[in-house]
Length: 437
Image (cartoon, rainbow, N blue to C red; front, side):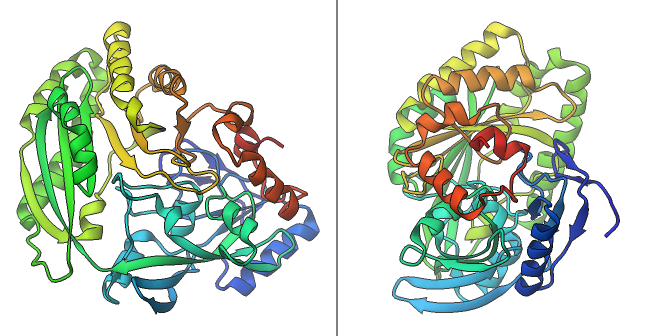
């Protein structure tokens, strides 16, 4: 294919690969990798390009997985189904396909544009103190290795390969198929409401324990939040979705079009941001609705931004937010985007940001036309003080030297990488930063 430029969604990364490829089958994917190996070229796979980092950047062969889509098999089990999905399947398509077969993913993030392979490989997660990230739903993988061979792996077959590759950053090989443990379809009742930050924190423990999927947004320069409490409902629950007109006004016009305009104005007049945040946080109303789980989990994000997210011990959340608030007040730096706070259960995935501990996630954003480094650097230092772990797909400055100590299986992961990609076919500058050479 002709030389061209690839860019990610956020515009933070670009690549000028030697060649683009879009394989139509796993067999064709194998041949592309074998040819690249003979030529000594680096290889990376890309899905929707929703990572803010350079995890998919390459100067060699960039493989787009968009043609490898769909559900291949669905096997019923006692508590749901094991569903094998081709790696390029976008989450929004997968959710629809599962629903009409009577199933759903256990938990999802708040964006569904990613491919399933990209989402699990970078540690995408949702919220809910009783639920893990997407990688915890994976029970089997098929992966194309650096010599073009195909390996199947699971907790009982090629177990070390499975442990590394189910959240592998693309460093082990190219995922071609993923088998997910899916559950019977369910609906969610969503209750969204404005609150004070103090009230939100005062009842945080209760919400984490009793609400299936709880999250909140805090507006810097204020003591105001917008909370989201999503409760799981059985499949026979009548759905009462938001009226289409109200949904269009609130989710498209206000959350996207108006928010874009507000950010353009605040870029020109940053001093107006504290007053805008106070007005915005008080203008948000309460709403309650019940809909298909995947429609409640995900929402449209059309305003372009930069994002950094840190996973911290759940019991360190309040002190960490206080430190961020103190820094904002002290520094004079203005922040228009709300701070997003979510939760996850401890898990056993080697490179999961929730490995071994109950976790709170703090995500900070900045409009793409504004400088973000000062803000992100400050939040990163605050999060590091409580052993925070950066989201692998979002902006951060961490390196292998200082990440090793926070991941018990970091060196186990590197050993698997050495075994299956000794010549570093799948290497790139981002992986050199976070994993070393």
